[in-house]
Length: 291
Image 1 (tube, rainbow, N blue to C red):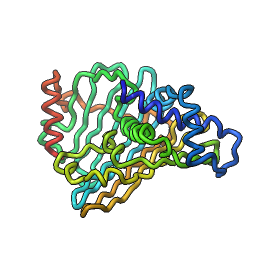
Image 2 (cartoon, one colour):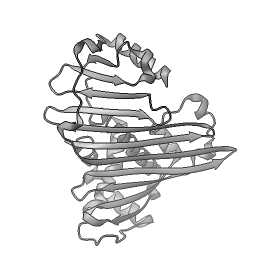
Image 3 (spheres, rainbow, N blue to C red):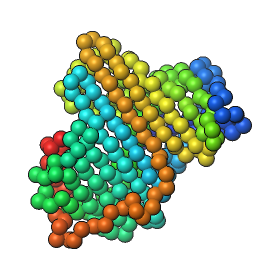
Protein backbone atom coordinates (compact mmCIF):
# COMPACT_ATOMS: atom_id res chain seq x y z
CA UNK A 1 0.00 0.00 0.00
CA UNK A 2 2.79 2.42 0.82
CA UNK A 3 4.35 1.75 -2.56
CA UNK A 4 1.09 2.47 -4.34
CA UNK A 5 0.52 5.68 -2.42
CA UNK A 6 3.97 6.97 -3.26
CA UNK A 7 3.32 6.31 -6.93
CA UNK A 8 -0.09 7.94 -6.78
CA UNK A 9 1.46 10.98 -5.18
CA UNK A 10 4.07 11.39 -7.89
CA UNK A 11 1.85 11.11 -10.90
CA UNK A 12 -0.84 13.05 -9.11
CA UNK A 13 1.67 15.88 -9.08
CA UNK A 14 2.19 15.47 -12.80
CA UNK A 15 -1.53 15.56 -13.45
CA UNK A 16 -1.93 18.64 -11.30
CA UNK A 17 0.49 20.43 -13.58
CA UNK A 18 -1.50 19.17 -16.56
CA UNK A 19 -4.75 20.55 -15.28
CA UNK A 20 -3.36 24.06 -15.49
CA UNK A 21 -2.04 23.63 -19.02
CA UNK A 22 -5.23 23.79 -21.01
CA UNK A 23 -4.85 27.42 -22.00
CA UNK A 24 -1.11 27.34 -22.66
CA UNK A 25 0.21 27.55 -26.20
CA UNK A 26 2.17 24.57 -27.51
CA UNK A 27 5.79 24.72 -26.48
CA UNK A 28 5.20 27.36 -23.85
CA UNK A 29 7.08 26.65 -20.63
CA UNK A 30 5.16 26.35 -17.39
CA UNK A 31 6.67 27.04 -13.93
CA UNK A 32 9.98 25.26 -13.40
CA UNK A 33 12.53 24.71 -10.63
CA UNK A 34 11.40 26.05 -7.25
CA UNK A 35 8.14 27.36 -8.72
CA UNK A 36 7.23 23.96 -10.15
CA UNK A 37 7.92 22.23 -6.84
CA UNK A 38 5.80 24.78 -4.96
CA UNK A 39 2.96 24.55 -7.46
CA UNK A 40 2.95 20.76 -7.51
CA UNK A 41 2.97 20.53 -3.71
CA UNK A 42 -0.04 22.86 -3.49
CA UNK A 43 -2.05 20.56 -5.78
CA UNK A 44 -0.95 17.26 -4.24
CA UNK A 45 -3.92 16.23 -2.13
CA UNK A 46 -6.51 16.97 -4.81
CA UNK A 47 -4.89 14.74 -7.44
CA UNK A 48 -3.01 11.93 -5.64
CA UNK A 49 -5.53 9.31 -6.79
CA UNK A 50 -5.14 10.17 -10.47
CA UNK A 51 -2.52 7.51 -11.22
CA UNK A 52 -4.82 4.70 -10.15
CA UNK A 53 -7.45 5.96 -12.56
CA UNK A 54 -5.34 7.03 -15.54
CA UNK A 55 -2.44 4.59 -15.58
CA UNK A 56 -3.49 1.23 -14.20
CA UNK A 57 -6.98 1.53 -15.63
CA UNK A 58 -6.35 2.80 -19.14
CA UNK A 59 -8.55 0.30 -21.00
CA UNK A 60 -8.62 -0.85 -24.61
CA UNK A 61 -5.02 0.20 -25.22
CA UNK A 62 -1.76 -1.06 -26.64
CA UNK A 63 1.58 -0.28 -25.02
CA UNK A 64 5.28 -0.67 -25.78
CA UNK A 65 8.27 -0.78 -23.48
CA UNK A 66 11.95 -0.79 -24.45
CA UNK A 67 14.31 -1.58 -21.58
CA UNK A 68 18.12 -1.55 -21.72
CA UNK A 69 20.54 -1.65 -18.82
CA UNK A 70 24.33 -2.04 -18.92
CA UNK A 71 26.89 -2.08 -16.16
CA UNK A 72 30.43 -2.46 -17.45
CA UNK A 73 30.34 -5.45 -19.86
CA UNK A 74 27.09 -6.96 -18.56
CA UNK A 75 23.89 -5.89 -20.30
CA UNK A 76 20.30 -6.86 -21.01
CA UNK A 77 17.89 -5.47 -23.59
CA UNK A 78 14.23 -6.46 -23.93
CA UNK A 79 11.18 -5.17 -25.76
CA UNK A 80 7.68 -5.61 -24.39
CA UNK A 81 4.47 -4.98 -26.30
CA UNK A 82 1.03 -5.44 -24.82
CA UNK A 83 -2.68 -5.03 -25.44
CA UNK A 84 -5.86 -5.10 -23.37
CA UNK A 85 -9.44 -5.00 -24.64
CA UNK A 86 -13.03 -5.74 -23.71
CA UNK A 87 -15.19 -6.21 -20.62
CA UNK A 88 -14.21 -8.58 -19.16
CA UNK A 89 -10.76 -8.00 -20.57
CA UNK A 90 -8.50 -10.04 -22.74
CA UNK A 91 -4.82 -9.23 -22.17
CA UNK A 92 -1.61 -10.12 -24.01
CA UNK A 93 1.99 -9.28 -23.14
CA UNK A 94 4.88 -10.12 -25.47
CA UNK A 95 8.36 -9.96 -23.91
CA UNK A 96 11.35 -10.56 -26.18
CA UNK A 97 15.09 -10.42 -25.59
CA UNK A 98 17.00 -8.28 -28.09
CA UNK A 99 20.24 -9.92 -27.00
CA UNK A 100 18.86 -13.44 -27.54
CA UNK A 101 15.88 -13.17 -29.94
CA UNK A 102 14.92 -16.83 -29.53
CA UNK A 103 14.14 -16.11 -25.89
CA UNK A 104 10.63 -14.69 -25.81
CA UNK A 105 7.62 -15.13 -23.60
CA UNK A 106 4.07 -14.23 -24.68
CA UNK A 107 1.52 -14.26 -21.86
CA UNK A 108 -2.13 -14.38 -22.94
CA UNK A 109 -5.15 -14.09 -20.66
CA UNK A 110 -8.36 -14.52 -22.71
CA UNK A 111 -11.59 -13.07 -21.34
CA UNK A 112 -13.96 -15.59 -19.75
CA UNK A 113 -11.34 -18.34 -19.87
CA UNK A 114 -10.36 -19.92 -16.53
CA UNK A 115 -6.81 -20.35 -17.80
CA UNK A 116 -3.87 -18.15 -18.76
CA UNK A 117 -1.54 -19.22 -21.56
CA UNK A 118 2.17 -18.66 -22.13
CA UNK A 119 3.97 -19.16 -25.43
CA UNK A 120 7.75 -19.54 -25.14
CA UNK A 121 10.48 -19.21 -27.74
CA UNK A 122 13.01 -21.91 -28.72
CA UNK A 123 15.53 -20.40 -26.31
CA UNK A 124 13.34 -21.64 -23.46
CA UNK A 125 12.72 -25.11 -24.90
CA UNK A 126 13.86 -26.82 -21.69
CA UNK A 127 11.11 -25.13 -19.66
CA UNK A 128 8.27 -27.21 -21.17
CA UNK A 129 7.75 -30.03 -23.70
CA UNK A 130 5.58 -27.77 -25.90
CA UNK A 131 5.87 -24.13 -26.93
CA UNK A 132 2.55 -23.34 -25.21
CA UNK A 133 1.60 -23.95 -21.58
CA UNK A 134 -1.61 -23.27 -19.68
CA UNK A 135 -2.06 -22.44 -16.01
CA UNK A 136 -4.82 -21.33 -13.64
CA UNK A 137 -5.72 -17.70 -14.31
CA UNK A 138 -3.69 -15.34 -12.16
CA UNK A 139 -5.65 -13.24 -9.69
CA UNK A 140 -4.56 -9.64 -10.24
CA UNK A 141 -5.83 -7.50 -7.36
CA UNK A 142 -4.05 -4.21 -8.12
CA UNK A 143 -4.23 -2.14 -11.28
CA UNK A 144 -0.45 -2.17 -11.72
CA UNK A 145 -0.25 -5.96 -11.45
CA UNK A 146 -0.50 -6.58 -15.20
CA UNK A 147 2.70 -7.08 -17.20
CA UNK A 148 1.65 -4.56 -19.85
CA UNK A 149 1.66 -1.66 -17.41
CA UNK A 150 3.87 -2.69 -14.49
CA UNK A 151 7.03 -1.15 -15.97
CA UNK A 152 5.36 2.27 -16.17
CA UNK A 153 4.27 1.84 -12.56
CA UNK A 154 7.85 1.16 -11.47
CA UNK A 155 9.04 4.21 -13.41
CA UNK A 156 6.46 6.51 -11.84
CA UNK A 157 7.35 4.97 -8.49
CA UNK A 158 10.93 6.08 -9.07
CA UNK A 159 9.69 9.63 -9.74
CA UNK A 160 7.67 9.42 -6.51
CA UNK A 161 10.63 8.28 -4.42
CA UNK A 162 12.83 11.03 -5.82
CA UNK A 163 10.11 13.64 -5.32
CA UNK A 164 9.45 12.57 -1.73
CA UNK A 165 13.17 12.97 -0.99
CA UNK A 166 13.49 16.35 -2.73
CA UNK A 167 10.59 18.37 -4.11
CA UNK A 168 12.97 20.19 -6.48
CA UNK A 169 13.46 17.10 -8.68
CA UNK A 170 10.50 18.29 -10.77
CA UNK A 171 12.51 20.75 -12.86
CA UNK A 172 10.32 21.80 -15.76
CA UNK A 173 6.92 21.47 -17.38
CA UNK A 174 5.79 22.67 -20.80
CA UNK A 175 2.74 22.35 -23.02
CA UNK A 176 2.92 20.34 -26.25
CA UNK A 177 0.73 20.23 -29.37
CA UNK A 178 -2.62 18.54 -28.90
CA UNK A 179 -2.99 19.67 -25.32
CA UNK A 180 -0.29 17.37 -23.99
CA UNK A 181 2.04 18.32 -21.16
CA UNK A 182 5.67 17.28 -20.73
CA UNK A 183 7.19 17.09 -17.26
CA UNK A 184 10.94 16.77 -16.67
CA UNK A 185 12.38 15.37 -13.44
CA UNK A 186 15.87 14.60 -12.16
CA UNK A 187 15.39 11.15 -10.64
CA UNK A 188 18.34 9.70 -8.75
CA UNK A 189 19.81 6.33 -9.63
CA UNK A 190 18.98 5.36 -6.04
CA UNK A 191 15.27 6.00 -6.65
CA UNK A 192 15.49 4.17 -9.99
CA UNK A 193 16.93 1.08 -8.31
CA UNK A 194 14.78 1.25 -5.17
CA UNK A 195 11.64 1.38 -7.34
CA UNK A 196 12.85 -1.76 -9.14
CA UNK A 197 12.72 -0.25 -12.62
CA UNK A 198 15.57 -2.72 -13.11
CA UNK A 199 16.07 -5.59 -10.67
CA UNK A 200 19.77 -6.42 -10.58
CA UNK A 201 21.43 -9.54 -9.18
CA UNK A 202 23.42 -8.94 -6.01
CA UNK A 203 26.70 -9.39 -7.89
CA UNK A 204 25.94 -6.31 -10.00
CA UNK A 205 24.26 -4.28 -7.26
CA UNK A 206 27.48 -4.60 -5.26
CA UNK A 207 29.32 -2.65 -7.98
CA UNK A 208 27.14 0.43 -7.53
CA UNK A 209 28.57 2.75 -4.89
CA UNK A 210 26.67 5.24 -2.76
CA UNK A 211 28.19 8.01 -4.86
CA UNK A 212 26.88 6.43 -8.05
CA UNK A 213 23.42 6.14 -6.51
CA UNK A 214 23.35 9.93 -6.14
CA UNK A 215 23.76 10.44 -9.89
CA UNK A 216 20.82 11.73 -11.92
CA UNK A 217 18.62 9.78 -14.33
CA UNK A 218 16.84 12.45 -16.45
CA UNK A 219 13.17 11.49 -16.76
CA UNK A 220 10.43 12.75 -19.06
CA UNK A 221 6.71 12.15 -18.45
CA UNK A 222 4.13 13.15 -21.07
CA UNK A 223 0.43 13.37 -20.20
CA UNK A 224 -2.43 13.68 -22.70
CA UNK A 225 -5.03 16.44 -22.61
CA UNK A 226 -7.51 14.04 -20.94
CA UNK A 227 -4.99 13.31 -18.15
CA UNK A 228 -4.11 9.83 -19.45
CA UNK A 229 -0.51 8.70 -19.74
CA UNK A 230 1.23 9.08 -23.10
CA UNK A 231 4.85 8.13 -22.33
CA UNK A 232 7.63 7.90 -19.75
CA UNK A 233 11.31 7.93 -20.74
CA UNK A 234 14.40 7.52 -18.54
CA UNK A 235 17.86 7.85 -20.09
CA UNK A 236 21.31 8.08 -18.47
CA UNK A 237 25.00 7.33 -18.77
CA UNK A 238 26.99 7.27 -15.54
CA UNK A 239 30.77 6.87 -15.14
CA UNK A 240 32.04 6.87 -11.60
CA UNK A 241 34.40 4.85 -9.41
CA UNK A 242 35.75 2.87 -12.33
CA UNK A 243 32.34 1.58 -13.43
CA UNK A 244 30.10 2.48 -16.36
CA UNK A 245 26.30 2.40 -16.28
CA UNK A 246 24.10 3.01 -19.27
CA UNK A 247 20.31 2.77 -19.16
CA UNK A 248 17.34 3.51 -21.36
CA UNK A 249 13.75 2.82 -20.29
CA UNK A 250 11.00 3.97 -22.66
CA UNK A 251 7.30 3.28 -22.16
CA UNK A 252 4.54 4.42 -24.54
CA UNK A 253 0.79 4.02 -24.74
CA UNK A 254 0.70 3.38 -28.47
CA UNK A 255 -2.98 3.30 -29.41
CA UNK A 256 -6.26 1.42 -29.23
CA UNK A 257 -6.36 -2.36 -29.03
CA UNK A 258 -8.13 -4.47 -31.66
CA UNK A 259 -9.02 -8.19 -31.96
CA UNK A 260 -5.99 -8.61 -34.24
CA UNK A 261 -3.71 -7.98 -31.24
CA UNK A 262 -4.67 -11.32 -29.69
CA UNK A 263 -3.49 -14.76 -30.85
CA UNK A 264 -5.47 -17.84 -31.74
CA UNK A 265 -4.73 -20.68 -29.34
CA UNK A 266 -3.27 -23.89 -30.77
CA UNK A 267 -4.90 -27.30 -30.55
CA UNK A 268 -5.16 -28.40 -26.87
CA UNK A 269 -2.83 -31.32 -27.65
CA UNK A 270 -0.09 -28.75 -28.30
CA UNK A 271 -0.49 -27.10 -24.89
CA UNK A 272 1.19 -28.40 -21.73
CA UNK A 273 -1.14 -28.03 -18.76
CA UNK A 274 0.39 -26.73 -15.51
CA UNK A 275 -2.28 -27.71 -13.01
CA UNK A 276 -1.16 -26.02 -9.81
CA UNK A 277 1.11 -23.44 -8.20
CA UNK A 278 3.99 -25.89 -7.77
CA UNK A 279 4.02 -26.69 -11.49
CA UNK A 280 3.74 -23.00 -12.41
CA UNK A 281 6.60 -22.07 -10.06
CA UNK A 282 8.80 -24.81 -11.51
CA UNK A 283 8.07 -23.56 -15.03
CA UNK A 284 9.04 -19.98 -14.21
CA UNK A 285 12.16 -21.17 -12.37
CA UNK A 286 13.24 -22.87 -15.59
CA UNK A 287 12.55 -19.70 -17.57
CA UNK A 288 14.72 -17.72 -15.18
CA UNK A 289 17.51 -20.24 -15.58
CA UNK A 290 17.26 -19.88 -19.36
CA UNK A 291 18.03 -16.17 -19.18
